[in-house]
Image (tube, rainbow, N blue to C red):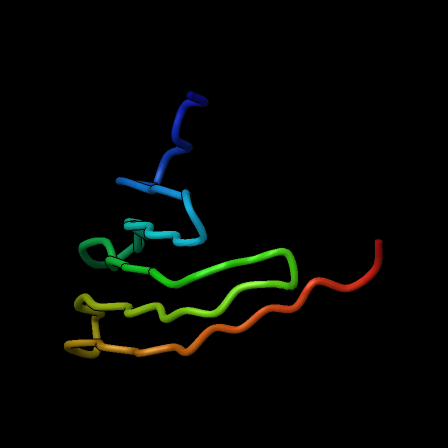
Length: 73
């Protein structure tokens, strides 16, 4: 298995499902945490990412619906 790049706390990709947990450092606060999960096939992927943490302006929570389609060969 390949090493996991810095910032990625955990990830799995298998059997048409993916899950990933990331830490995103900030200059003036604690890292933001991103949890992604969803499904994929030959045509693309669909899932959700939730970003949580604290910024200098206060608490943060963002929910992103993600969809990507494969284009080209």
